[in-house]
Amino acid sequence: MVKPRCIVRFCTILAPILLVFFGLLFHFGEKTPVRKIHLAYSAKHHPLAPPYPYPYKFLINQPDKCKDRTPFLILLVTGRVHDLEARHAIRATWGNENNYDVDVLRIFLLGVSRFFPNGSQMMLEEESEAFGDLVQQDFMDTYYNLTLKTLLGMEWVTKFCPNASYVMKIDNDMFLNVDYLVHKLLHPELPVRENYFTGYIVKDTQPSRSKTGKFYVPEEIYPNDIYPPYCAGPGYVFSADMARKIYDISQKIQVIPMEDCFMGICLYALHIPLTPPPSDLFNGHNIGYNRCKFHKLIMVHHYTSEDLWSIWSDFWTLKSSGCE
Image (tube, helix red, strand yellow):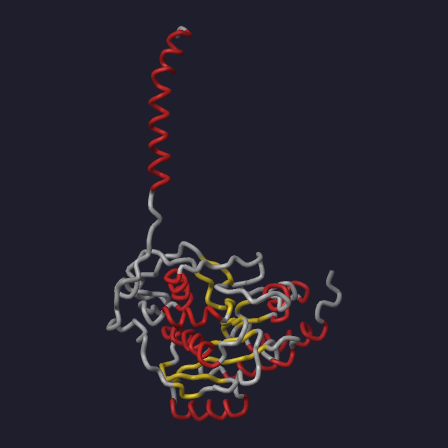
């Protein structure tokens, strides 16, 4: 049997050693530097590096769209040149500027079609003449140029509509509840925020190095092993002052083809953190239509033009009737 005096002596000797050990462990753990992301590199000649900055030309523009108006919200809608049906559906549903009690402005962002470019361009020019909502620059309209398309939106807001309050970048395969966005998140009755950028926040994502994957980003374009936090690309919202800040910083750092990740990189370079939204407002997945549920969220992913046509009358006409 161990005598009590031996236990006391053992504890007397061991306790200071343990205190020093755990003190050092805590000290070094506290001082461990946060992993930094380095942006001082260039890959402009890599075939997957979107050329930027580059003097892209406006082929179709709406320079007077904001003349004599101060939009509360600009909708920058991204899609492909040939997504005519999607654009028509959006114009008639959530993108209808006349639906809302604040000034909402709609713009579709486009590049140049790789297929039948001459015929496609004539079609777009006729569409622009009819609706006045297309903005196009002379880069190819491809998935890997989605970053250029988003930067086109930032440039357009900066140069042609800097007096707006807020901007939402959104893909054209989305359901969007503009009323809920305006009144439950942005609040027109309050002063306009600055340095505001929010959406479905993604953290601790690593670049895909698989050459056969859709999201492949080679180390030559982005050598870091993690992305800064970013908002998922299907839809995110920001104060209009961020358009100029992102447009300006993008002239100085390497552009990557993953558009949403690049927005996070821009914010990291600007030392501007994302603003966490209230939970469950930004839905990044497809869910079945339910009027009551859809009236309490901002967006739902993977909604085609047919989907929008089929639900909009119920959603907009009946609003939230019958919902608790």
